Structures are given as structure tokens and as C-alpha cells.
Length: 71
Image (cartoon, rainbow, N blue to C red):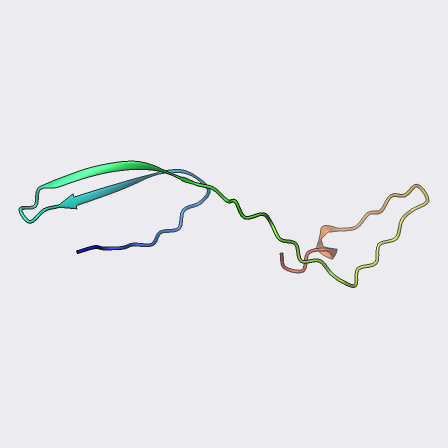
């Protein structure tokens, strides 16, 4: 019999412990290290209608919320 359990882990190193029993209830416990990495680059969703003006020295001040449409 194979039991599957889906877990969600945050990025980092975690210890996973497996316990196996036989028909006589003898058990073996094994722990392994599991490394979780986020290899998906962030995806931006920008506002198509944003207009940003520049000052005379070429500086523009725009709040981040102008560009973030739910990314």
C-alpha cells in the first residue's frame, strides 16, 4: 500500500521524516533533508496606460502601485 500526502513547504531547508512499518509492526525511521528553491522569476503586470513625466533634471517619482496591476 502506498500512501501519498502533499505538503507545501516554504523556501529553505527542511527535514522530512519517513516511518515505515511491516506486518509485525516493526518500524524503521529515516530522516532526509529537503531543499526548496524558488527558481521561477517574478512576472510583472504593468499598467498600459501609466504616464510618467520627467523633471528638468531627468528625475521621475512614481509610486510602485502605479506599475503593479496584481503581479
